[in-house]
Length: 29
Image 1: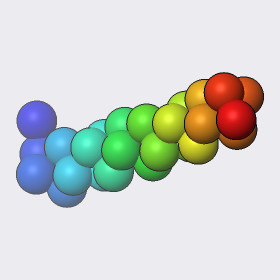
Image 2 (image 1 turned 135 degrees about the vertical axis):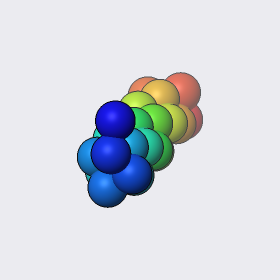
Image 3 (image 1 turned 180 degrees about the vertical axis):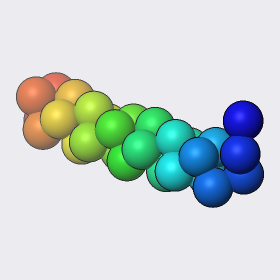
């Protein structure tokens, strides 16, 4: 796996995690 692809994948995962966290926070509060 290339470094660029891995970095892109990690960025996507982090972004999704932040979106999910924000969604859960909005629902819980």
